[in-house]
Length: 339
Image 1 (cartoon, one colour):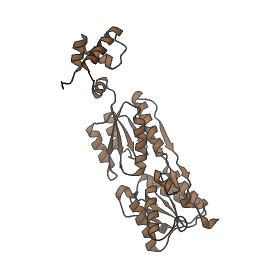
Image 2 (cartoon, helix red, strand yellow):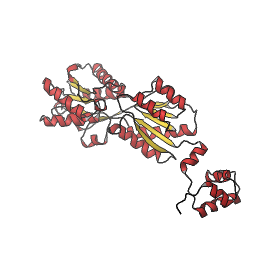
Image 3 (cartoon, helix red, strand yellow):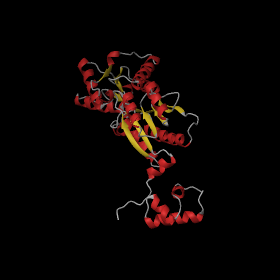
């Protein structure tokens, strides 16, 4: 009773070749109506349930999409993954998520490709080095990059420099004079671009750049883009006895920690210190946190759609675009003193 019915038994019952059964299962038009009905009746009689993976393997169709990501726990990556997850429902693909970590993503990506488990991959915030490029080329794996760029691949690059510039420009226009920033303890392309954009905005508006007002926490978890890092940085400002009028945090998660630390010190946002974040995670709305929106969910959806197009039509012209962030103004950067 528990024996699994095979395609061979279906072929025997329908009195056709196994290849004919396979063509019916794959929706081929190269089967007569009479023969198709015989095979379908045999399938119903035997309660045959074909293995989806086996059919795909036989037809050489992609069946497994992988998302390689440095972390599953940060809100930024979660928003992108939500977009991928929602879009993947519309595709006949399974999905696996692979955590590369933030310390040595290149080695982790190499281990991932060595396993050969994915037919297509989205690389999220992972720079494609020469070694990674050779791995992708060797395995001929369709790939889309998010928050990274390479001339050989489709990518959705985030304009972190512009995001940093928008942050600096906004705080200047709000009338704040002593401007500071909470940076990440681990340097990355994204963090350096945000710092440079922020500083360039201050320079363009003839504002003084005081390096003592740029702090990072000590926590290296997730490269320092954490609540702990924001919390620790505020206490460094307190220790030196000098706070900025407004602080731009490298991401919203840092801003959450910074706001909590200020409350512990008896300081209010924005009355004593204005706080600004980056990413526009869901929580930022409920904290009235001014931030920079990177459109993470939308990027996840678009990257998945693009990968589906590549799978269907390999060799098409590359789609390479830069996503420009937008300012989301809320109460945390209101300057009551300037009114």
